[in-house]
Amino acid sequence: MAEHPPQQHTPTPDGAELRDWTDGHVDRWQPVLPGLDPDIEASVTRMSRLTRHLGRVREQGVADYGLHKHEFDTLHVLAGRGGHAAPSDLRADLNLAPASVTGRLEALERRGFVLRTPSTEDRRKVDIALTEAGRDAWREALDVVGREERRLLGVLSEEERHTLAGLLRKVMLAQGAAADR
Image 1 (tube, rainbow, N blue to C red):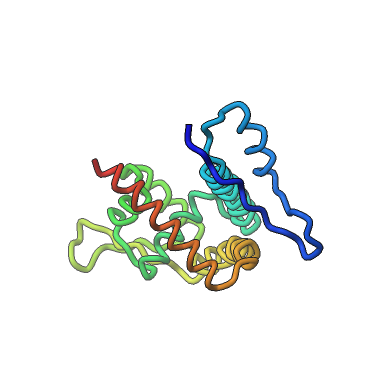
Image 2: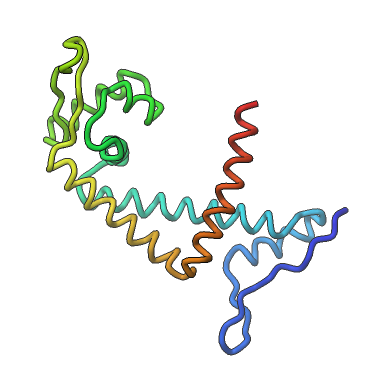
């Protein structure tokens, strides 16, 4: 059985220890699973809880601006492509079946958020363009999520955020390498 160093906790200015829900979770599981690495368990648990929290904020944020999550996701991908894309590009980015993308685009076009026009290169194809109304709806919903991300990660210094991003990149590269096998 591997020895694990004691978890490091954040002290308050008066020297008391700040603990979160995850600290109690790890404390409960260590006697049950003596080989449990407390840092791995704490990191994975915190990432999972943070992801769920941001997902809820995102759902509420897009709903507050009259969007469904799938509409926001489609507008987000389209905005990330400079506001113009082919349906096949959106299908690949969103990892959806062609009929699903078509349904989304039809609904977004009815709402005035996208415009579908025949391709200038191939009349059998369609070009998708983000309208001003679509860009405004996307940006307003995005601001809600961005404010919460800045609030949460704003407790870290710029250097700490940079370190966190690098560490998470390292973890994601390991995940990607395993998925490629």
